[in-house]
Image 1 (cartoon, rainbow, N blue to C red):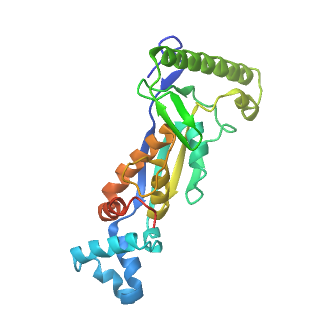
Image 2: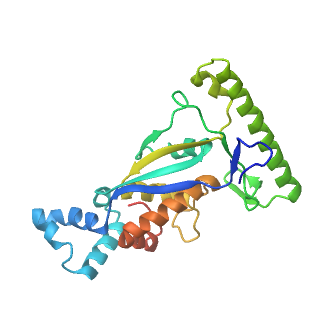
Image 3: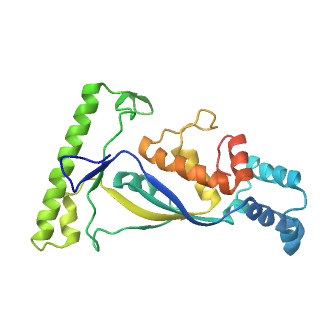
Length: 243
């Protein structure tokens, strides 16, 4: 959502996730798995028996034979607040290239939670839930966040205009600033990410992701499911556990 009071500053409550390129299909899982029995002829067996192929992928997922799911590649372009990236990069099985504030002037795009974002944490660590905030709380969050971001970006540009290096001037910017990156992974790494960053009642193991990184994960999962429908179906059928 754009901010009408300060023309140059943009406030958003969403994320961008685009699949830039991929070499990923269910066939990649099949030929990798069948090399143990078919050797180099496993490539010729991909289309031999679709139902048998579906069963093989489900078997691999169920019994957690994970390496056949590593023979694929997906590169996503992600725009999200910096605090999302700091959580994202804990997943060290991805490869990352993030834009650098040392080499370019950072754009004034900041995150403000949408009205649907739950604001209040109830309970103790390890056993808490988030619930809706009041209209007053949402108003406070929106106004305080916007004013803080305006002030921070004003200080940033003042330093740049005064000749201060970008790598120094950026120190005043908040983690709600949007950044962008390319993130590359294989299907096994992505399943590990999704098992931890998407909250689903049917998961074998519960996860409690922060909503903003879950927004990224949901969009990545949707695009991956279109590429590898049999693998995604097996992931769902077996409790969303990374093999």
